[in-house]
Amino acid sequence: MFWIISIVLLVLAALFVLFPLWKHYRPESGSGQIRTETNLGIFEERQNELQLELDNGSLDQSQYEALLLELKKSLLFDTANLDSGTGKKPAGKSSATGNSNPNETLSKFIPVLLVVLIPLVAYLMYDRWGYLDDVRLMELYEQSLASDKSEDEALHLASQLIAATEKDDTNPWAFYFLGRNFTDLGIFEGAERAFRDAADRMPEGPDKAATLGLLAQIKYVQAGYELNDEVLALVEQARSINPSENASLQLLSIDAEAQGDLHAAIRYWRLMIQANPNSAQAQQLRERIASAQQQLADAGDAGAAAGPRIEVSVALEPGLEMPSGMRVFVAARNADQEGAPPLAAISLVVDDLPATVTLDDDLALTPAFNLSSADRIYVTATVSRTGSATVQPGDYRTVSESFDLDGETDSVNLEISLSDVVR
Figure 1 (tube, rainbow, N blue to C red):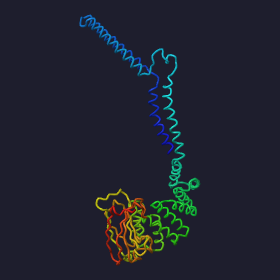
Figure 2 (tube, one colour):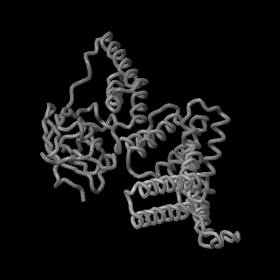
Figure 3 (cartoon, rainbow, N blue to C red):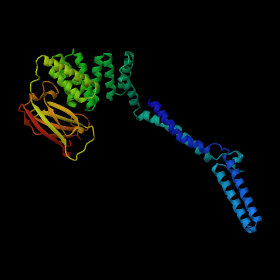
Figure 4 (cartoon, rainbow, N blue to C red):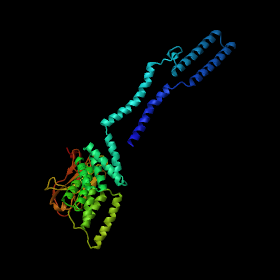
């Protein structure tokens, strides 16, 4: 597709040069002769009128001769302009001998030469310094995303992506899509290596979190569908970057449901719905939540035990404007364990502000590390320029005072201002 579009654009650009050039130097048509004959007809008609006026006595001889002379000059002037405009040369000059003007030949040749050379040089330079390899990789990526590819197609794509990683081992997406194809083929060891290589090369952000989530799923399968410490560490790392990371939440919900902990499964399903409430997956999850709640009701379970809750109101300082769609991460942290992952976290966008959210054990990144596990906490609100929950220079971050959890509902107000920019 890239080549087709570029060729079409080149042809259109060439026409902007070649068409005016052809129009300027095309062979003379009969329009010049027609115009000459018209001018002669007008001259003869006007000359006859002057003769008639002389015969009638309307003009004397001197006036007649003066007007006739002016008429002849006008005819000569029009004829001279016609010859100049059509590119004719006076008789007896070089055109009569068949010799061409060197400057005219050069003026024809240079535009044509540039039309040929500019695309050639542009492609050579793009191949040398441009992103042509990335364009080729994008075609492989699009093929990798196709859900209807056969096993042979997946193997062919995997071999091409392996060659791409050997040619340039700094591109994380080549490794990422290699992992996707290995997963489709059931080659989990290869998928694990590819996803790990991709994550190591990605900057902090949602893409890295998604890759870590897929890596956690691969390790979960390799561990015999057990949520062991290694898998949990990957899930925690992914959710520390993006608390709503879908693959990690899927793992936690699957394991909770397998263990018979429907309360925990419902919590994770709700988080997945919150990340994309209008998706088809969200509708399926709502049905699963309804079914699980019915099972709990049939078993006489009134619900999970109450835990600490924090009502957090987040707003922007009056007059402070930010681009639409920027992510806002609200998190509760253990005041006695600086640098530890959040005890509870939720993500919004600046378009939602001002907003009030509730942080509780349902929003824990891992089941054992939640609000109930801490005595003293503080709450942060971060507006991320990169979409990552990891704070970066240029983000906006406001922090509450530390306070003790009393087992009931606490309230915190946070306002994000210009002075909260992270340096």
